[in-house]
Image 1: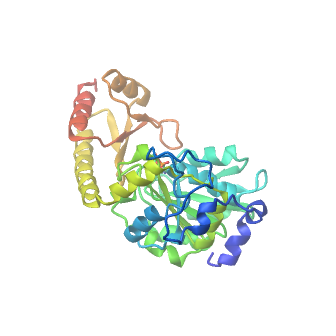
Image 2: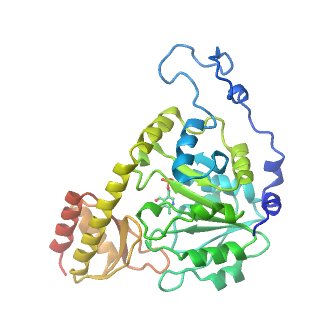
Length: 350
Ligand SMILES: Cc1ncc(COP(=O)(O)O)c(C=O)c1O
């Protein structure tokens, strides 16, 4: 769907009609002069953090726009990607009327965000090799399907969806496609971001929590048409990204060569783990992964999960996810951590 006027009609009236909170500081943001700030009831004594942060995060967005090659008005920042999933639902989905589509096995937060906002969830399972079932998606959507969540690489399975399939969904869905690229830096497939301007109904989310190594700072990036970004800006709280996070992320953005190196090492470690997993008898299957984790199928996931816990290693038991019976999802750690994992797994009875 490639008509931005149509996309604007998808938003809830309550949001399009909303007059958002305006901080006085946003009105003189373009001025260079040093101003005396008596507008926000802060304590004027310098503590490094006595002032509210920049509500529009302009310095940070400038750095991101250069690296990601998108304009500043195509960027929205949130408290991790988790937050924006809820915010998107609040902008576009009318409680007790609209629905969103998810593709299990999938990342758990989409359903939680929809449910706490009173939005129905339609589930279209992935096919047996965890690929997209496009026909079923097209059959399942109805006039109230506002959004479909597509994580690629997918969590917990680790595989990517083909760019062709993603394009098919974009072209055959009248609502918004939220393409969650949380693990894109680890993937052999390219990001969809360079095609942002081609699809008005595309929303790409990325995060600083994974490859960027900043999970504790909580910063999610959303890239979309400026009209969609405007709607998200209406809904956000005024000072949603704190000063510490803004500064820490700007610093990390100057270290992208280091990040690339870390990713390279993690990918080598991932291959090493896969090879070692394949030597262990009770590991029945090692699923191919384009992320920084590996899904494995074992003889009894609860038993193996507990055995690993006893040996001081925490992994994720994903057995209760659709099509994932007896699976464990294991993050790639440091070389030392991975050695400990291989030793623990090899030490357990076959
Ligand atoms: C697919 C996917 N999307 C989003 C997130 C959450 O990212 P953030 O830490 O930015 O909230 C995760 C976290 O595990 C994830 O696996």
